[in-house]
Length: 366
Image (cartoon, rainbow, N blue to C red; front, top):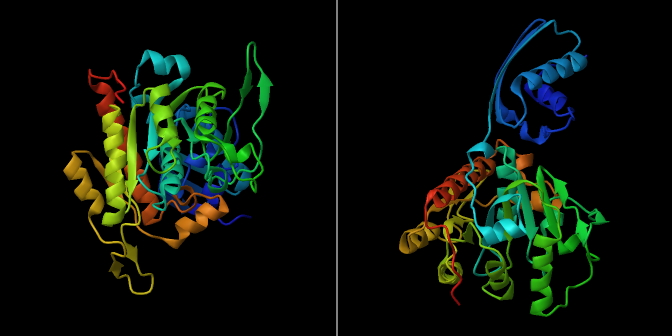
């Protein structure tokens, strides 16, 4: 007989597969209380889902009885919440004509490379999905696509002939739909394209991919303020942008430029995320500000935007990226995962604040 532990219950429920239910949303944090006494099990759970809670309780009960036949009485107190039902839509005729099923488009940008922007974008997308949102991710870093590796996907997307065009189905893992040039070309082949070709690929990722209904479509932009960034803001009105920086001034200089670029084209900056904020030594527990401290908060106050949070340095973040298992999913009880979940919820708040305003029309000024 399987040993009845919280982890065993979690693994049992994750075997469930049926339409409309993503087992990845169930983590150890979802199990709020767990009590076993003989052949009785009392369990209290809370997580975000679109599924009917009574139907879920029935499915959970059936699965647990299958894996733990000694249980005679199972009491499941299930509290569900729908994050996506509270996500306001950014309504714009131009956006709705290009991406009719997408509520919000959010660019994750940085002024320079090496700040961990793609890692943040991937974990942010997974965090939003864990909270029940329908999330898509476009790897717009054409020359350095890393999203397929970080999401652990090597498959090629399926292509089909539509009435007047060829359409592509996005790949999916951890509840996130995504597309990247990295899954369309040999992973050892460099992308030697001029700017217009790279910009054209981004346009196709929006118009030729079957995204369906999404609460968020996130764009992992290349560093800097070049062709791809301008193509994006000229092609589709963005709900907003998120700037990723590190604490030191050499990074903040370029983060300011990225932020000012979005201001110039009238794209709201939803917030700043400070990556590599500090390091906690595992042997002593002492905190080290390796790259300085407080830079993200300073630039947020200076430019009057929201500070979404500071993310610590943790070797497991790098390991998760290399192994294709985002840490926010693989290590749900870690400090990093808790911070990322908090950042994703603050981002949802900022999106709703932005969409609740009347001045939603974006005029591109170059």
